[in-house]
Amino acid sequence: MSDTNLLTVSDLTVHRGAAKILDRVNLSIAKGETLALVGESGAGKSTIATALMQLLDGAEVEGRAELQEAGDLLSLPARQMVKLRGRRLSMIFQDAGAALNPAYTVGRQLTTTLRRNLGLTRSAAHAKAIELFTSVGINDAEARLSAFPHQLSGGMQQRVMVAIALACNPDLLLADEPTSALDVTIQAQIIRLILSLTRERGASCIFVLHDLALASQSCDRIVVLYAGQVVESGPARDVLTHHRHPYTRQLESCVVEIGRHDLVAPEGTVPPHDQMPKGCRFATRCPRALDRCAGEAPPLTPANPAKDGALDHVFACWNPE
Ligand SMILES: Nc1ncnc2c1ncn2[C@@H]1O[C@H](COP(=O)(O)OP(=O)(O)OP(=O)(O)O)[C@@H](O)[C@H]1O
Ligand code: SF4
Ligand SMILES: [Mg+2]
View 1: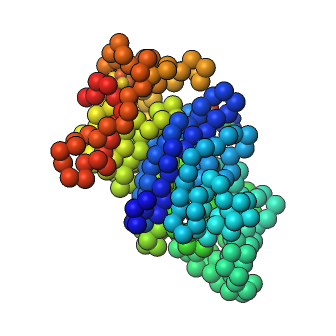
View 2 (view 1 turned 45 degrees about the vertical axis):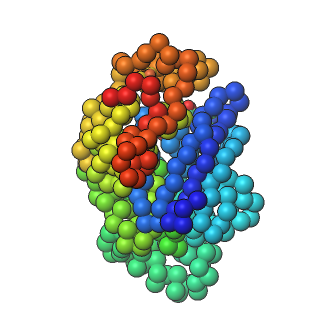
View 3 (view 1 turned 90 degrees about the vertical axis):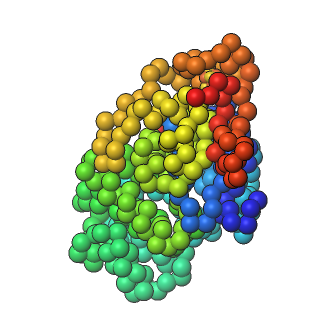
């Protein structure tokens, strides 16, 4: 593992019964870096994030996920994970309304996090909560602390979630499509807010997103997933403008701009797990498929082996663009 990598995920594989939901996923994230996980519904993006948090239920998990100075997130005992969550890594879920507890005020939920993880007194936690609410753009922060989740708009609830997730200055934030449940006009604001706050704090961020254009506008690096496998990854600009995998091209042609919501999915659908091709999983939808594709899985290959550092941009395809 490189010294600069905060997290290195190696061969992360997740089974649910006979279905292989993730297949040998490798990725790493440097300190302060923003990484986008991109792919259509069912690709396994949330499964990666929840596996890293040890929050996956009913699944068999293999591989390693080394977090600097903590060890393997996939095999740490539950009591150590409890200590890490919030402090070293935290997660913002897609639906803030469901993630917040309806029975407690948002202020109580935030101050509980602060008191439990940082050991703050009641009054220090209250003062810090006001500061955090203000930093995520909640007006009249002190009054809002006594609101229950249902008294806030969806955008406001997501700001509360951002405040809770960043409350203890985690090294790594996992943001799982944090804006897809929101009104389009609020989406760009929340994404920019999360990125500016994580950058300000020097934290790293794994952003789960549906679309490539949004990822390239907001993140340093992109990992494209298809049916549980990494099909292409690299620096955001390379993956957007010099992509080699036909699936990445299809995602690229479904461009949406930040703040718009008219995503068009690539043609066709991902095969069910029991009908997945043995070789390239994209073979049933690929316009460039060759005879060998369905039977033989393509390995990840450097996009430009002659160029220094180009190993960083890799793709898995027998007949690349
Ligand atoms: N609790 C579960 N039980 C059974 N299968 C599941 C469960 N959660 C996820 N899956 C399956 O795992 C695969 C990956 O799901 P995942 O939620 O990680 O995809 P995703 O990329 O996050 O999709 P989306 O964009 O829709 O959120 C899908 O085939 C899904 O049906
Ligand atoms: S390996 Fe074959 S089927 Fe898979 S993406 Fe490449 S050309 Fe298409
Ligand atoms: Mg998901």
